[in-house]
Every structure is written in structure tokens, then in C-alpha cells.
Length: 135
Ligand code: THU
Image 1 (cartoon, helix red, strand yellow):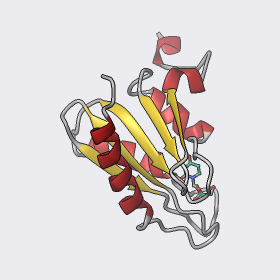
Image 2: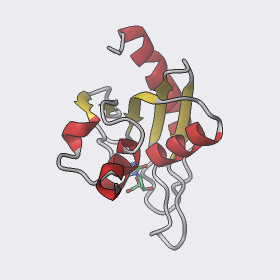
Image 3: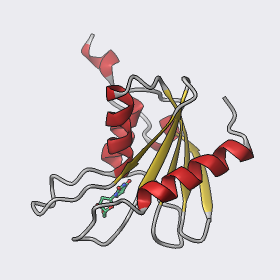
Image 4: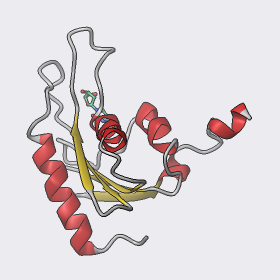
């Protein structure tokens, strides 16, 4: 589906709200994500850091986990809100995790100044490893 301006605005508001809940005492780099699904749900996530650093969960992966638990459907659009005046594009780990559920997902990255960058997930992780390789 092609995201409408109205839906993107709703997703950005949800992502910014989730961003304000981020647990980021170490990096102070707060991130929010809001994912729209084919069940017409908006599911959010924020980054959740850990003193061990490496156990940190990114906002996008928290949202994906919640979609699975809540049986919220297939993710169609992921809006990410970052804390710096440059659009925050998902890290490699999040790209791989999101790819599991929809390679055609729209990724819409926002910066704190509302700067925006649009992608299709498969373009952000070309020649990727996925479940097909296991068959
Ligand atoms: N982070 C995210 O939540 N999503 C990303 O796609 C990139 C990075 C978080 C992880 C960590 O808590 C902080 O941003 C700094 O890397």
C-alpha cells in the first residue's frame, strides 16, 4: 500500500510519543518507531538500553516483537523518529529482523527537524539472507 500523508502524520506522532518513553541512560540517544500493519494497527517501540550495552534493543525490534505478541498482522509501514536533525535509518540488525516479516515494507525515517527519507526495506538490505536459504 502507498502511505498517505495523513497516515504518515499519525505514525510520526506515535513514533515521537514512543521516543519519549525510550530507556536510553547510556547513549542518551532516544529513538521511537511506529509500525502500521495490514490489520490497521499501529504498534510502537522505543530503544531499551542495558548496562551491558550489547543487550540493548532498538526501537524497531521492540515494535516488531510487540506485533508478534499482539498478533497485530503483517508490518506494512515503519516510521522511525530519531533525536538528531538527520533522518534516522534503521541499523543493520533491525533491517534483518524486519526483513523476516515483509521485504516490501515502507521505511520512513525522520530526524528531529522533521527531515525525512523514504525507502523500501529490500533496498536497504540487498542480497540478504532469509528463510529461503534454509530450504
Ligand atoms: N537505535 C535504535 O533504537 N534504532 C536504530 O535503528 C539505531 C540505533 C538505538 C540503539 C541505542 O540505544 C541508541 O540508538 C544508540 O545507538
